[in-house]
Image (cartoon, rainbow, N blue to C red; front, side, top):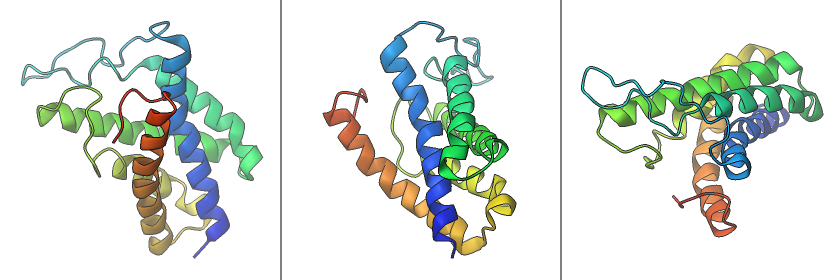
Length: 162
C-alpha cells in the first residue's frame, strides 16, 4: 500500500473532476462548446450531450498539470491523470446516453469508477501502484465523490446532489 501516492492521485482527481464544475459555475455558457459538436449517435441520442465541453476538458488538463508539482508529482503525471479522468468521464457519458439517461444525470458507480480507475491505471507505474492501491483509489473516490457532491450542492456549487 502506498498511502502518499494514493493521496496524490486523489488530489489530482479532485482537481481534474472539480475544475470543469467550477468553470461552468464561473463562466456559465462562455466557451462551453460541446465535445461531440451536438452530433447524435446511430441510436438517435446525443453522442455525449451538451454538458461535456471542450472548456471542461481544457481546464481539467491545464489545472491538473499545474497543480501536480504542488502535490509532489511531475506535471506529466498530472496530465496523464487528468487525461485519463476526462476519458473516463466521457466514457461514462457515452454509456449513460446509450442507456437513455439524460445529460448531467447521476449513475452511482458509472460516474465514479471510470473517472478514478483509468487515472489510477494510467499512473500506476509512475506512482508505484499495485492492484490493491488501484482498488483503494477507486473505492475512496467512489464514496468521496458521492459525499462531496452533496456538500457542493449544499454550498450551491453543484446544480444537483447525488
